Length: 101
Ligand code: FES
Image 1 (spheres, rainbow, N blue to C red):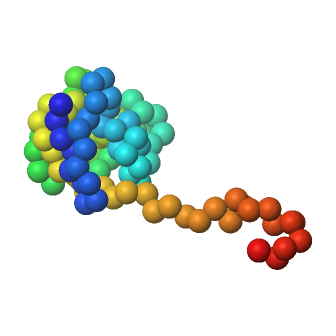
Image 2: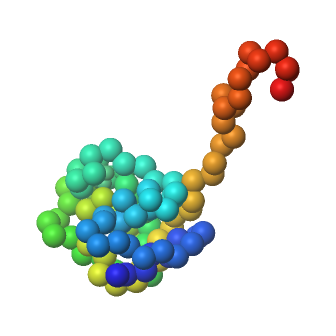
């Protein structure tokens, strides 16, 4: 399977997995809406390698950008994407436990 490199890691795309799904599985910061090539929310810059599309997507993408929801990845690529920054969960503790902690 092709290897996907981002600013933070390199991981293999799994069988039948879209690039968007692989980025979500590995905790990357990636937006999406339609997941089918219409909205363009999932686009990222590709830094090396190439992808293809089964059908030409309807969303606008600039040169050097790809749509992670619907591109076909058949070779190793590097993309401009970072892992999601985990925010502390302010509501994980009991705010009303009386300990003030
Ligand atoms: S999520 Fe809409 S084009 Fe990819």
